Each structure stands twice: as structure tokens, then as C-alpha cells.
Length: 232
Image (tube, rainbow, N blue to C red; front, side, top):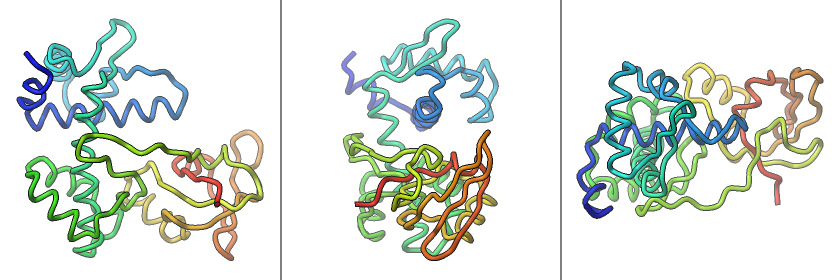
């Protein structure tokens, strides 16, 4: 069976699994915890049973979309990554549409986009992208993959790893929790915001920031949910 035939036959549930694995794998790489995703972490993310995850992992493995290493976990093949990014493209376009066109807050759109993107056709996806202004990122700053499942190179870092007293630009945030997104917005910590990291307390202590002309202090754990790049 050709790769195209395999991917054309994917159900929406299979695509959701691939996107979830990609998100978890991306988080693992950021945290330097290894290149594999555990099936238990996948079950927790999708709120499904372990047997259900094992059945789906077997299907995706047999389709050549992931590799499952006993006692290590799973990771996507190149074909699996492309399909995952296509699904993430749909999700992020819906988020941008809900914020840019319909006026939702960035803290309100993640779960809605999950539901809508599952049934989104290619023509509707294209029209929503056009109406949203053909965005290159979602409201949380994550890049929108190309229709072919490609991502541009990223050059940002986690906030606590950024240089001190250097002009920075907030690029994206990792959390989708409503309360935290509302809190970040209240602090002015939105994608595109200029900031400087003034001081980082030792032993994972608070981070002191200058956001525009205002000074803010956030906890280390919240700082790990923010990515920045050096301002050009």
C-alpha cells in the first residue's frame, strides 16, 4: 500500500492521535526528556483508556506513521509528522478565525477549535484562513504549517533560557489553560510583545521582567510556558 493511500484513509480520530503525539513529542524535546512519548502520557492527554491507545498505536504503526519501541515509547515517522502538522494547521486556522473574525478571546478557542477542526473540509479551511487574514501563526503564537505539513524554522527559546537585559520579543506560549492565558494577557504577555528579562532568582525562583514600560514578576513555572527570541 502506498503512503498516499495510507494517509488518505486516515480517520479523524487517527489524525487527532497524530496531532496529540506531535504536541507531546514537541514538549519532550523542549524539556530535554527524550525523543519518545509514552502511551500513558498519550492516554492522559486524550482522556482515553490505555487499551484504546494501544489499539490506535498499533493501527498507526501498521500504517507507517509511527514507531513503537517497547519500554521506550512512540515517536512519529516523517509521514506521521506531516499528517500531524496538517491536522495542527486546521486547528490553528480555526483558532485564528475565531479570534480575528468572530471576536473570541485567545483563552476561549482551543477546545472549540478541537471540535470544529475534526470536520473541516479543505475548501472551508482555505476560506477561513482567507477571512482571518491568512495568518502565519495562531493566537498563541504557534506557527501555522503549510498545506503540505511543513513548518518554518523556529529560532526562539524558553524565557528562562533567554539572555538577561536584552531586548526580546515574545513569540508564543505553551499553555492553553484559560486562567493562565487570561493572566498572561492581563500582564501584557502576548505574542509580539517586547520585553526584557531583568533578573532570574536562583533555584527556579521568580523571573523579573520589563514588559514595555511596565515591570512584572512571574513564577519560574509560568516562565517555562513562554518562548521568546532576541529582538532584531
